[in-house]
Image 1 (cartoon, each protein chain N blue to C red):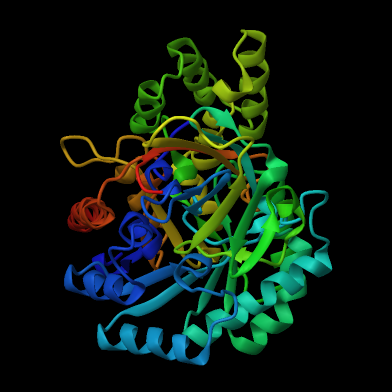
Image 2: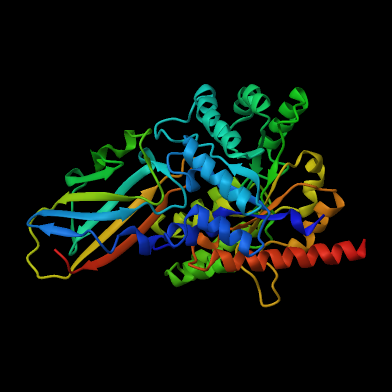
Amino acid sequence: MQASQIGVTLFSLTNEFYSRQYTVEQLLAKVAELGMGPGVEVVGFQSFRGFPHVSAADAARFRDAMARHQLTPTCLAINSDAFIRRDRPMSVDEAVAYHEPQIRAAAQLGFPVVRTQFTAQPAVLEGLLPLLEQLNVKAGPEVHSPMTVNSPLMLEYLELFARLRSPCFGFIPDFGSCAVRPPPGFVDYFRRQGSPPALLDLLQRIWLQSGDTNAKREEFVRRAAEAGFTPPQFGPLTVLFSIVCPQDPRAWLAIMPQIIHVHGKFYEFDAAGNETSIPYDQLLPVFIEGGYRGYISSEYEGTMFSPASGLEMVQRHQALCRRIIATASAAA
Amino acid sequence: MRNNFSEFLLSPTGFELHGRQMRLQIRLPWYRALPLSVVEIGCLRLDGVEVPIGDIRITVNGRTVAASALGELTDEVWYVLDDALLEATLPAAPSGPAPHTVELTLKLFPPYIPGLAWVTQSSRAYRAT
């Protein structure tokens, strides 16, 4: 693996963008100036007003900025918004129609890969295949908490991919699904907000158990209620199960040839520069061993709970990844 | 529950109060655009007095709707950098002097994370009329 495979998603720079300090074009300039690329991923519904409809002028401006800064479009994170209606989920046909303009936008903006989400069932991906092949865009469901390589839904995707044998299908691991503990900053944040210590202890104890993550979320809600805590107290904490779950880093080897992009999720670092909940020293060697040749986006998600500078956090993340890659390469 | 978006939820500018009519600017407390169908106004208070949901209107993309009707608007998308205008008819004109304290709870149901209710609370004291 080369250090140049470590790129960035502009999602990491949400604090800079949301606060209106930087436009997308200014972020791209900063990414280039700080050497965070060349690989750049963006979230369509974040970076483009009116997405999935992107005007020809906006698309040209984005492509020009990418070219001017010698950046490479890696992945467009699109969204599988199955629950836009509050009364029922989208049908397969509705979901296909919802994804199609997003895939067209990816082609228009120059992205070779789109990230879908587990809310897009395998039948939705199957329905998208003609357009993917026509536009030469690859689509990959993100293997993101609460899903892991061994989840029942993964088996359904694998069956679909084996049946259709299209180079347009693959997977996008999110390293948050290989956490070894809840991010300490997450727990500290809720402690400062006044979450009862006993409730936070229960949350962490259940999170650390083995077993299905959705079942653990349900167990946490049930036991928190039984212990007398209220939904406003325990409801916000359940987001933990949506952002991180445990998994053996070596699980990725089973699908390594089908991995088309990676989200290098991270939250915070210890004094030695290591991620405090996600074992990069184990994860990156697995991808070196597996011969992974695609991009890994530095994906900072501390923005949910921290006003920290994404620019600074991505630099620390990429320094960590470069150090691990150099050490592993020297040992090989 | 405060989160990282709480400090942005209530814009520091654009607050107006005329008798029982209040106007303020708010931001979407999420990192990406969302359809209005997954946005809910949880609770709005001025100086501790709650405004009934039926007396709140919201304007996004130039379209004004009743806060109680947001759940049907699957096609109206609130972009992440845009302010929305919140207008409320108060139960009574506030009796005390400025500053006036606005408290807002806004709930989001991200349509790709089944079961998650993202609740953002914020409050701000406004001097302007």
